[in-house]
Length: 122
Image 1 (cartoon, helix red, strand yellow):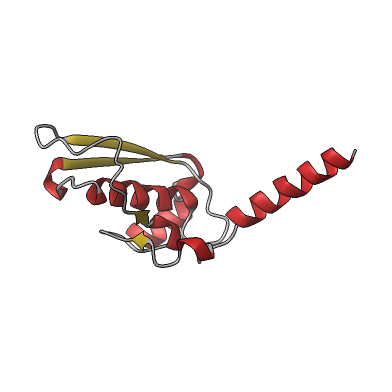
Image 2: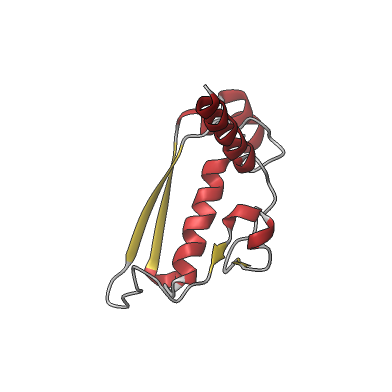
């Protein structure tokens, strides 16, 4: 029972830590934002140990699926943060902007309802 209680506390604190919008102290000053800085977690950490090195002979094609329902309209949805972070990761790896082709597929709850669409675009 004691092990289960400890495990439960660890899991709760892990999820609590992910819910924060600020960086943990050990990451302060290590985050780089090569293109976008719309959110704290769009940043990347520079490393010399890159697994996939940039290859100038190819065009990089990336598809990102955005489906997240926006719970708080004053904050950036997590899937949109992933779009920015993915772009930042590629740019930080040395991929030139003209060699990076990104497509964002938006569907589900991420799409505006009819009233919101008409208010914005009509």
